[in-house]
Amino acid sequence: MSQRHILALFNDFEEAEGAIRALRAAKIDGFNFDDLTLKSPIEHHEVEDILGERSAPVQRFTLVGALMGGLLGFFLISGAQANFYSQMKGGKPIVPFPPNFVLTYEMFILGGVFISILGFLICAGLPAKRSPLYSAKVSEDQIGILIKAEDKAIEKIKSVFVTFEALEIQEEAGK
Amino acid sequence: MKDIREDIAWAKINQDVLKSLENPRKLYWVILFAALSIFSVGVGCEIYQYNVGMGVENVNNPHVWGLYIATFIFWIGMSHSGTLLSAILHLMHADWRKPIYRFAEAMTTFSLMTAGLFVMVHIGRLWQFYYSLPYPNERGIWPNFQSPLLWDAMAIFTYLSSSILFLYVGMIPDLAIARDNIHAGWRKKLYTALSLGWEGTDRQWRNFRVTYLTIACFLIPLAVSVHSIVAGDFAMSQQPGWHVTSFPPYFVAGALYSGCAAIITLFIILRYVFRFEEYMTLPILKKTVRLTFAIAMVWTYLNAVEFASVWYSHDQASKDVLIQKATGPFAPFWWGMIFCGSVVPFVLSIKRFQTNIPVLFAVSLLLNLGMWLERWMIVAPTFSHGYYPWTWDHYQWPSIYAWGMVFASFGWFTLLFMIFCKVFPSVSMYEVKEMVYHRKLHAAKGGNNSQGAH
Image 1 (cartoon, rainbow over the protein chains, first blue to last red):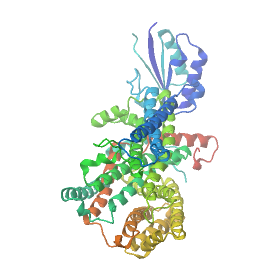
Image 2 (image 1 turned 45 degrees about the vertical axis):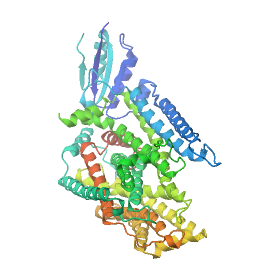
Image 3 (image 1 turned 180 degrees about the vertical axis):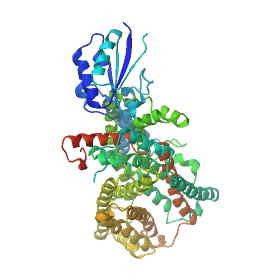
Image 4 (image 1 turned 90 degrees about the horizontal axis):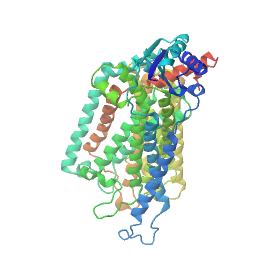
C-alpha cells in the first residue's frame, strides 16, 4: 500500500494532545504510531508522556567527545614533551602532570562541545530537507501533527483531527 | 510587577522581534556610525604602529605589558556575562533571563573577538601571531606547555569556539522563525541556510534541549577556567603584587561584574533602539541590577582580601607596590577604581534607582570604567615598581596611539554587536514564548505568576 503524509494544525497544545491520545487509542489499521511527529513553536516536555519515551542520545556523543578531546590533549602535549632529545629537561619531569592537566581540561571541554554539536545534528536529523507538508504557522503559534500512514487510514485519521477541532488539515497528493 | 505580560500573543512576539531586524529607531544608525568612526581611529593608530614599530606605544622596560594587555583582560572579563546569563541562570531555571540572554551571549562572542585583537596588537608583528598558538616552530621545538600564556591561548580558543557554537545552536529555532516570516532576499537565503531545515519536531526539540543543557554545563567550568588562567598569567609569576592566591576567584568575580554592568548598558540601549520595551521590562532590569550589586559586593570583598593578603604577607616588595598604587602617580586611577567599583554600586542597592534608566545607564558605564581601571591597576603599577630600585619607572605613560587603540576597541565591539542585533534576533522568540506559556500555565494552576513558572 502506498503511504501519504497528512498534517493537521491545532490552536493549542491541549487540542493536539487530545488528538494524539485519540489516535493512539483508535489503533487505526495502516497507521503506525511511531510515524507521528509533533511540530511546535516551543518545546513541550509533556509530549514524552503522550508519545512515549523517545531517545535523545546526544550525551553519548558528549561522553565520547570529551574523553577523546581530553586524551588527545594529554597525549599530544606529553608526546611533544617526551621529545626530550630536543628539549633538555635538566632533571625536571619529562611529562609534568599538573600543568598538563590544564590543557587536558581545556581539550576535554573542547572535544565535548564539538562532538555534542555533531551528535545534535545527527540525532536531530539536521540539516534536513523540508518535510512534505509544512506550515509556517508552526513557527508562530500553532501546533502541528504530521502523520505518515497508508491510504486506507487517512480518512479515519482525518476524522480524529476534525473531532479535536483542527484549524487546518493538509494532505499530500495521492501517488 | 510582572517580568513579562502573559497575554502577549505568540504571533506578536515574532512580529516585534522580526521588526527589529528591519526597522530600528534612528539612534541605531547614529550608534553604528559613531562605532565605525571610533573604530577607524584605532585602525589609523594600528597602521601607524605597524609601520613605525612598537616604540610608538611608548611602553618600554620595565613596563613590558601596558594598556593593550590591561584592555585584553578587560574584554576577556566582559565575555563572562553571556555564560552567566545563558548557562548559570539556565541551570538555575531563572526564566527571567530568557528575553535578554541572547544579546549577552553575543556579547561573549564579540568581547572575545575584541580581546583577541589586543594579543595581536601587543605582539606588534601581526604576521607572527601564530607564534602564540601551541605548534612546533621551525626548530621542531614545541612551545612551553607549562606557561600560563600558552594555556591562555588554548583556553580562549576553546571559549571562543564553544561560545560561537552555543550562540548558534541556541538560535536555530529563531532562525527558522525568521526563515518562515521574512520576505525573499538575502536574509531569507541566510536564515534558510543557517536554520538547517529546522521544523520544530519533537525529535528536534528533544535533542536540542539535551544539547543546550550539555553545552551549558561545559561552559560554566570553561568560563571559570578561562579567567582563572588569565589570573594565572599574573599569579604564577614572581612579580610583586601579582603572586597572590586569591587572584583566580578575584578575576572571575571581576569578569562577572563587568559583564553584568555591560548587560545593563546594552539592555538600556537595545530596549530603546529596537523598541523592546515589552520584553526587556523594568522588572527584568531590576533583577539584573540586583545581581550586579551582589557580584559587586563579592568583587569588593575579594579586592579587600587581596589587599589584606599583600599587607599581612610581610612581602615588602608587594607591600611597596600596594603603597605605590595608593600614593604614587597611579593613585588617581587606583582610587578611581575603588570609587567606581566599590562605592558607585551602592546606588544599585537603592530601590528607586533600580529601575531608573538614566541613572542605571550612567552607573553601568562608571562600573565598567572602574573595571577597566582595575585591570590597568593590576598590570601597570607592578611593572613600575619591581624588586630593584634601578628597575623603577613611575612616570612612563602610554602614547596617544595606545590610547587610540583602547578607545577604538569599544567602537569595534559596538560595531560587531550592533550589526549582529540587526541581522539576527537579539531576543530569543521561542524562549520568550516558553516563558509566557509556562507563566500562563502556572497562573492557571493558581500560582503566584509574578514569580514565574520556576
